[in-house]
Length: 65
Length: 134
Image (cartoon, rainbow over the protein chains, first blue to last red):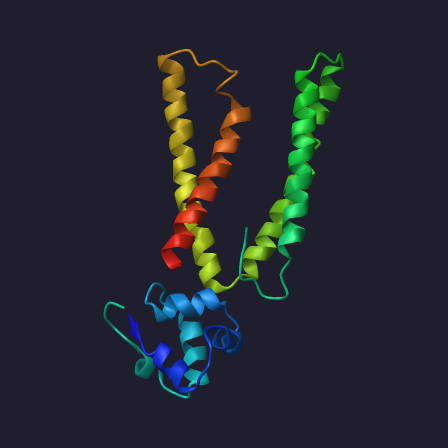
């Protein structure tokens, strides 16, 4: 799954650690999602979407990361 | 051991202390039972079970840690066990065949050796899973 997490984070000038804190996950999780090595659970995807005030499908799209 | 946990879970130290205590007690009792000490059979049996509650405590803390872990950490732990468990079964099954094929020296191949290989298989699985998501 492809995602725009890195772009959205960069737009807000947040570090991976800062984003991880806001989401309540580890920095490793944020890094793995950004690099496409890990697809988040639906619950976490909803939290990410809510944090960036976007719909899930605006952040995550099907296809190889 | 378990990384990336939420604050409500036990610390790594709280998980490691019962495990370390179990290991020390296990090897102390093993050393004693292997020595020439003359003690009653029922006492020997009681000594063999003495470390078990410590391992149960470790297991309880470990599961608490897993439940409070970040979702990626839970995935990593699951993949580590998914590697270790079948390999452990394979080891036991193969040993059972080898034991019937040739005589195995209990000094080299016994329950006392095999459980340590299980621990190493878990660590191998952990390394592989962490590398995958690094």
